[in-house]
Length: 586
Image 1: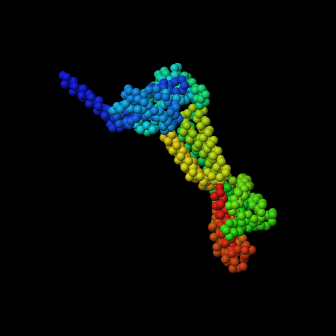
Image 2: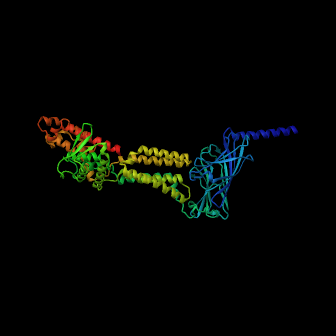
Image 3: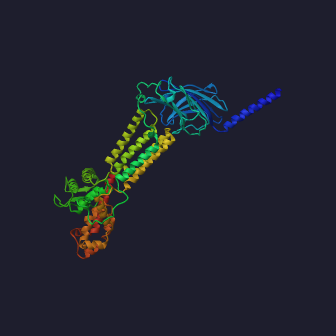
């Protein structure tokens, strides 16, 4: 009989060992986690939780408390008791992965281990309107262990109305609802049960909302002020912000830029009246750039208002020519000519004169933009500003979401204000600053996403943050490539540009005498450069200039130079040197 009893005990022990071995299976599983949470009057909670881990779980044991919508620090956690298999162990609390890590010592026990922690967690309750909300992490993203099941009980303040209390699990950023049969509210007590398992690295949390009662605001803490209305739930949804951003840029496409259907191009054989080459460049590109000043100087030179010469050291010098009041110059060209020769009849385009040229360009740019303001559509840089503000607001909600409303509002105002000031400053003082900084913006976006992931933001929110930044950067590349809004002036400008780029020899011979070809080349060269067709325009004269010289049709300009082709090449070289110089200084 005694032998049979010993055999039976051995079989039972073997079965229990096999059961534990089957549960462990060589994996560092969390077998279960049970927790009891008491809500205190100072917005803190006292948590008693028991975690059972398999024999393969690493030592020491860590308990991570982190949520994407909370910024807990080590000062918010006070460990009251910690045991392993019933024996006391030491603990250490540190900041970790956007939250807090509680590390425990070890008693040296092997096999399945059971850890019990009792700790107080501050700032766990958030006030909104006439309600309170509690969020508590069952498993954080930095947890490398698997969760098989979890049971949570929450003791709310006395007198809490159960009919207005709601409790549910959140898997990542997805609310799983409060309709599960296992989730029950009885008076002041809420019971939740998670039976379906959870993979390592996944985030699971408990959310409980209840009418404002026993949890009073912390004195002196403005972020805990009761009565502040909570923001609507949609502001924490990345899909809504992406739809808003896409809708804005679609509105920009149809309201501020040209449509795909345009009228046929009709050839124009001269520039629109009253506009200088620099003004036409600004209208064509819808923004002031580094070639506008060069186009303005070439336009004055082509009309006889100044002469451009190249010195032995390779620098260029402009000298005033003609009368003080030149009837052929437009208003902006008059102002540019007057600014260039205020101090002397000649000006050298050298580094020593860079400061003076900057002042000249600033005045010329202001006059030019005022001249073209009626015909000019919105600048692409300016159109990007609302998009950046939408993205920054979205990042604020996705990163700081879930805090009490006043603290969230402060974070949003600060982040959007800083970003807005930086972007407006870039647009105001750096021409095409936003459009040129595509690579820089991409680098900033990568840095923001990396920082968000490193600080423990919810993975789903991190993905939406990356998608929104990528969409905004794509808009910076796409927006300048949209055609400008169609106007009568732009239609004439397209016809004139088409003529400069495609005019054939017989057409010019029919419209102009060969003797006029050199003057035609020189007079329209600034407009060709302004519209980016200077190479095609000069190529039209390669075969006729020599013929014109042989027939005796040689003008005063060609007598001073080896030929108009060489003069045009010199002027283009000057324009390119000027454009490169201004671009480098910008």
